[in-house]
Length: 266
Image 1: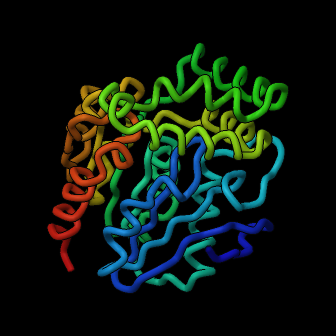
Image 2: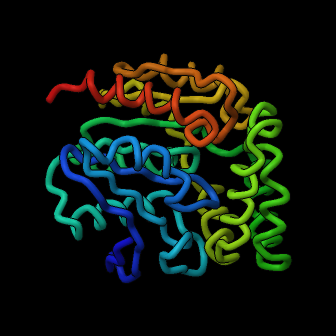
């Protein structure tokens, strides 16, 4: 892991390999470690970069609200600090997808392609906003382990729960070790994220959408609608996976990613 100073804070980032760069952006409230199967699979022929976003993992924590736009700005500054001058494939899951929308809007010239995993284009409903605010208050009062207990039942396919408890336990440990302030700041930031649905027809960036067949947060039907609205997008549904599709069925997810990468113009 490298420590890089960007926008007044220190970001930790995994940076390995050489070749066309892929920027992996983790979900909430996790760290770069959720991408380990992808980092191992693609480091042989790509430069793989996977930061801990502001407030997560080994990166610095800031108080208040951290917006998805702020995360996108941090990513752009990180690429500068790592001397990445060529366009990147940005692969984001869930909150990482929310960050990807903002990155695409602000830095389209830096994108070669998008891979959007188990994410949404719509903003939170009023009830959703209130839930985010309650979570932010709850984690400050009760700690990160309480967030893990509240979130984990919604993140995985029943198949994963029956055959791979180690993956679930790993995420519980990751969430429990995350800064409560980091979780709260990102939760408030997600509550403020804009609806990007109207922008989808104008996103011509080659895009792959991936979703677990059992994802109850960003459903296959919802992501199918996102893909249909984008002029240069395709959708792959991952069997025996929920919201953490790339971690639950990495073989299928990596196959979809590699086929997409091979389809891109060199």
